[in-house]
Length: 240
Ligand SMILES: [Zn+2]
Image (cartoon, rainbow, N blue to C red; front, side, top):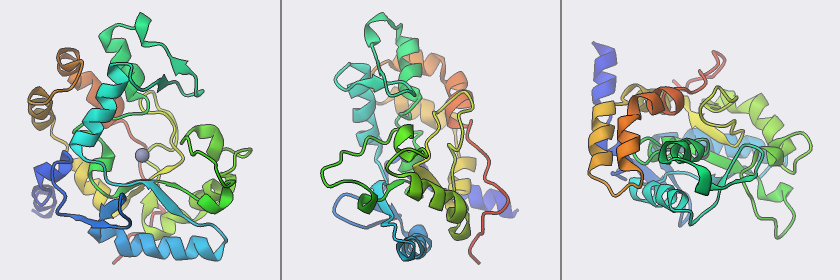
């Protein structure tokens, strides 16, 4: 029973961003999954040969960090944006509407692919002007954006190193995120290990804002955002 062994090999705490034993540090603030490092390094070298400094903007994120991001948006401390980059005013939204607006770009704590360490947001500082503040907004990666060259490169080459785009297109859940790439050999294991009971329990024991409305609607939220990701194309090359 190979497949069930695979599922069992995922540590539930890792799935939830509550364990860091699987990580290695790329810099003081960026950590990724140890088993992804060699594939990632190879991709960085290949990009460098094409004059692109492929760099991680965001790698592993813990449950507590995601909880803080969520609560800051839910309480209005940090702005919530729509896919056009416009700020959404939370004042006229019900708690459920507010949760949906946050979920367009921010995962629920416990359900972020960034907990796994094998999903990263990337950019290329050498394509940006000196004091440029990266927003991670779709226009930056579009044909007219400063990161167009990186975006085109990733679409052409990321699959050669085992990476794909889980948010390649908007399918009614999470927005299109051309900066978010996922290392398939690891990500597919974490994705399969998703456990809604475990998530419910974890959120229940947390200080998440909007807790009752989230838990009441968790089946829908999981269907629309957590499990509604793009399928990896068949040309993704898996390492031996
Ligand atoms: Zn991301």
